[in-house]
Length: 93
Image (cartoon, rainbow, N blue to C red; front, side, top):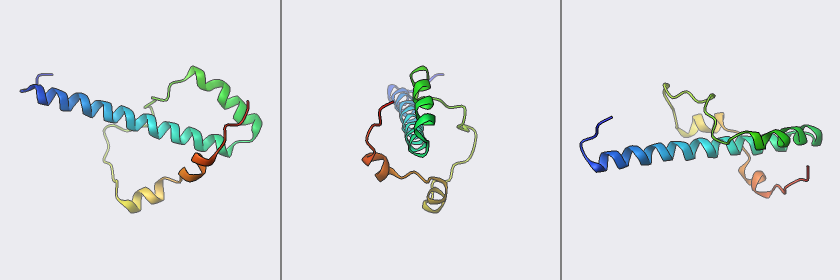
């Protein structure tokens, strides 16, 4: 792609990095939430597979869609208990 200025190229690079950071954060929050919901055996199985995966997976993300970030939509969509995730202690495998 061609850009008119160096600033345009920097905006593109920073936008890409912001998207990568957002996807990584989203994925890690959901993995953490899932770990809380599992029993010890299931948790152990999930944790054993994590080293072979990357937190930057995007198969579940629709890059072509419309996004609604209004408070009501987000409240209904995301049920992450961030406070609980922060208090959770690492459990031995």
